[in-house]
Each structure stands twice: as structure tokens, then as C-alpha cells.
Image (cartoon, rainbow, N blue to C red):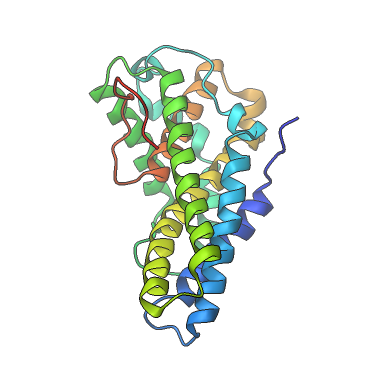
Length: 242
């Protein structure tokens, strides 16, 4: 049986990621040992929760039911907007608790954020007319696995090399901060998925097309958050790297 991931666990790891990033920033007053300890712990926790996430029931629950193209999910993407409205309250709560960290996505206006994640999914479907929903889910899962591999490697590097010279430790901290910023962004999206799949209105009253469209939007956002610098697109032919 797959082990579930709770919203509380995601929020704890997310908080530790943010705390490690703030504690290792240029303005920190902590020693190198203290910075390393916080970064290493955050990387280790992130490694474990990402591993559990991709095999969790909640990630399986947002798998789109159909195999057809993203572009055919819904004729007008704004029709899905009301079914994502419950995310606004969650976004507001997250934004109130989220510390400012350079390079990390910020909530800003919750309504604008929801509009943006819908627009991203719509744009991907328009650019890649044959990009299937099952392909999207597989691509998102692959991207999460790549992110997990990177943060696990950072945790391992700390365990092996943290007692070496200051240059090596500085390099480890820089690498850990880079990957933890990505993890923080992804966990933000994961928290929204947890909210999205548990909202009562969607679970009981929404038509089938709304379930499918919401899942596509949430999975697309997860793919984007796992690798924000790379456009979401169908996998290229040939072997996967990473």
C-alpha cells in the first residue's frame, strides 16, 4: 500500500526549506556549521517527501482520466475558473505565512495566480495540439523525480563532504540553495493540489469535464513548478536523461 502524504507534512517540510534558505542567506548571522546543518536537514526531508509524493494516493488522484489531448479537455478554459476558486483562500493563507526569499515564487494576488496557472495549461495545449493528458502526467512525474534526485544528491553531498574545506562547503551551500528554491516552489504547488482534490464542491457536485480540467491544470502546474525554467512540453523521442 502506498504511503500517503498529508498537507501538514508538506507544510512542515516547506517551512524547514524556507528557514534553511533564510538562515543561509547573505545576511545570516549563523556559523557555517549551523547553515550546513539546516540546509542538509531540509534537503534530506525534501528528498523523502518527494519520493513519497510521486507514489502517493493524492498524486494518483489527480491523474487525468482521459488520454486525449490537453487542448480538447475544455472548449473555454475560463469555464474551469469557478472550480478552482476554493484555492484562493489557501493561497491567501500560504501568502500570509510565506517569508520573502530571493528567487522563490511569491503568491501575490491569489486571483491572478489562479488565472496564471489556467493560462499556462491553456498555452501548452495550444502550442502542442497533440500533447496527451496521460503524457502530461508522465512528464510531470518525471520532472518531480528529477527534482527529487537533485535534492537527494545535495543531501548526500552534505553527508560526505561537509567537513571539507570552506570552498567545498560554499559550493555545497550554493547548490543546496538552488535546488531547495525549486523544491519550495514545487511544495507550494503540492499544497494546492492537496486543497484542490479535497474541496467538497468539486468532489461531489462538479461535472466530469470539470474534474478532468481541474486535474489537468493542477498536474500542469506541478510539472511547471518542478522545473520552472523549462517549458512544459511532450517528451522528446529517445532515452530519458536524469
